[in-house]
Length: 588
Image (spheres, rainbow, N blue to C red):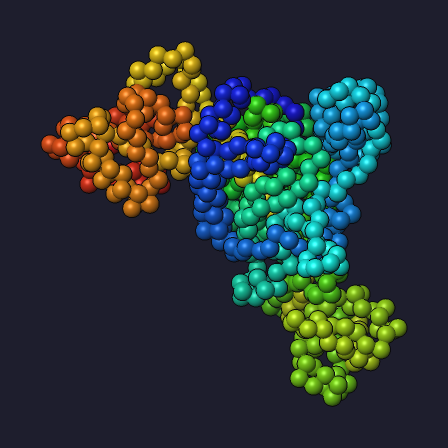
């Protein structure tokens, strides 16, 4: 999170609505709660699903990312290779009086710009310089220590197979690269998407839904050839103008078309800029206003260990500018690390019409030696060897009589005298390379907070409400596509057969896949108010004229405009308003 202008919003009033009306609430409340965990209620779950549906439309359908769903628990070897075991940590300090732990950089957020960029020595110096004490009791803080943020566990009985809950969904995608590359008929570039949960054992989460220990993610990994200098897909967003905060001038926001930002060297590549454009458009699609969004480039000292470059899509909230999406250039880091860690070559092929000369360094098997020993396994072992990194087993070839090679789900002991490393030069029509990766990583929970805060408003009273309460009239103006409930259905009075007609309309709309809510309690003004409070864009009222001409009144939330339409036309009209963005004014 980056300090900056905070959006003026009655956070307490909004959070009261969100809890009372079933968006979300703290987990385990009857046992006192645990910081960093929230339950999504009925409306929060629908809101999350709608955001994810729009995300799938943008990235799985339009960008043609391949969708996968992988385990949340990964063996230790995965995170040893990825660098998370060594580098995925924060600095904590404990109060020497009350014992409460704190994340050191969070204690400096109001005192130092971007404190998460400071190393251990700089953090210690800043804490001393500003005389920071325990926020809870005023006690003295202890020495800093590194704390790895991954939750650890074990696979199976005993403690031998150590594992971790994934802190991101990305790693399984990298492990599956060869299978996905073959599925995609070995065509490059291509993207892979995954929606799921991530887990980070945050030291002291104190910002509601902004900082969670278990959270919802939607991530994409776009694999491409770094030597390919064209990217036709970029034309979709070349002319899109976005606000940028580059790390060369972090105090200033500039506005640039993405094409110009690439030409000026502000954004490193067309691929990066393309996904910045897709991400910005997605944020607008779910209903976050353009003026509340910006891209901020990471400074070199705050880059993740795997990132060459990173731009955060930040949303203005009552907490300040909050990172909701990180778009990272992971280069070939992950595929390279997992190639080394596993001994499998995670590569794609580059093809040439005219042969080019290349230095070669690869493993080959000698079938004369391997055939008689390995028999039916010989061919599979030869295939595995051709994809392995020679450096992975070069020392073992000199010291071991056999080399363990994984073939499918089995380990085969391969005679080392049947394996050779081939070096030299040759002319090739194709060569293997490790693809680069651009990763747009979305925090769904943070996007929900940004969406709700930027669409929440209070007003003195509603022109259609007869509620004389001194409480302000509260409205969440969610767009139809993201609103959990699409339409409220009301009989004007609870007699004369109107509830029966309203019930039939409600069922008709539900069968069309629309989430509706039938309400018969209280005055019509109070019913409108309840729907406005949870973001419902449309309300349908059944009155006495409905019995005569089979028409109903549709009310639009944000303008209060009303039109009369036929019952039989309702499903098509509502679907047009919700999914095709038909203007409500066109119904008149």
